[in-house]
Image 1: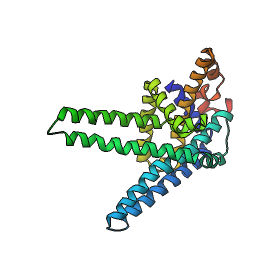
Image 2: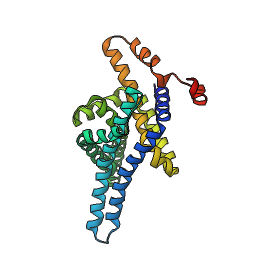
Image 3: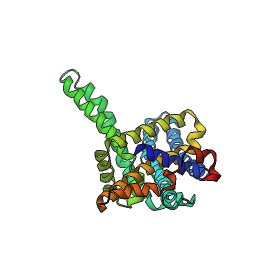
Image 4: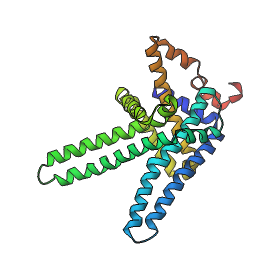
Length: 263
């Protein structure tokens, strides 16, 4: 499933590369702009108040602005998957329509990351002299919980735009997807982390392609899972294979990359 989703994500991105440049640049402008404001607040003066204000602004940037922008791209990607074409304006529509739910989910995830991230070091240090085995055990538990939160967050934007549920039902759905599909979800996390490293090492890629390609990966994995669950629910597992056979994004190869006019 992961290989097919990667293939789908590649062709979605390749077919609409120009639009991916634009929406990725919009995503970068929103996220990097918010982070720049946060950094400026932290460096504006020597008072601890400014530093704390900068930290709060950074949490709002990562937990608010980033999920909102990511949901906008997911809405754009959904249109590409559904209609094989789309408008950049769909990104703006996604931001406008889903921003409240995206912000709520983003702040829940951000709060969980802060709590679990600090717990990893806290328990190991606090209980080091008294009950070290318990401290290291709790730290390990916090680490795995943090990893689970990160992986489940990758489904948040696609699930929100596909199901159009409220924030809390979407959060529960994302957690259930990870529990039910641990290998696929872990593979998705590895791909996103690898793409993040590559994009950060090549800044133009981060600015003009990172958001769009990451969204394509997440949305295509979700699309594959949605097809499988829909076929299982209908009692016709063969429907998944039929849907894949009819999907243009999944039925092209290297020859179509070299000779697109022959497709």
